[in-house]
Length: 272
Image (tube, rainbow, N blue to C red; front, top):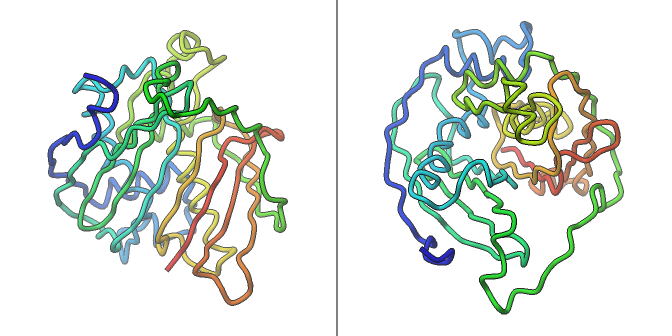
């Protein structure tokens, strides 16, 4: 198939199931503390919205299995999530997937793979390096230097990641070897196992509620571009740009860095 033939490709529908223990494990994997009872105690449990990204991740696997890309030759470029309702503490529901778009950057192709359910919609954008140039009218775009963007107007907190963060997060469903096996990580070009991009996003999303006076489970929408890998045990510095006074619906613009190197870029988050 040509790259553009994947546009609209249907990936089917699956029933996803989870229980309270799954939601609590996810919360712990993205840094929930023992004193955050709504996230880790089954009584009046609140499910972190970014848990939805583990429920929809199968759509990327399904696109790969269909032949759209080879995982070893692809990168998870960016992620977005829109909530349509709060996830119950335990549930079973259908999630449908399809390829929404195929974009040509000149050097790379980007597949936008979407999952939809009654509770959320998410887009997993997969970069295929070296597979661009299939659209003659697409100019070649130079990569944007890391960290370039709006000036930071408000500094948020720093977050200490656990050395065990990746091996814990992989129990939520993403068992890719580069997150646990040093040999696999080195074969992929990394000095040691790296943290899942979706784990970094979940950790940061949880921390961003406070600047808007919200609770982590009230997240309505989040998006970000994965600019660089993160190693377990690193310290994340999260910078935010506050919305205008009285316009909290605009949400926050944010970025995250490690030792001055941008790891999450073009971020935006809003809460209900």
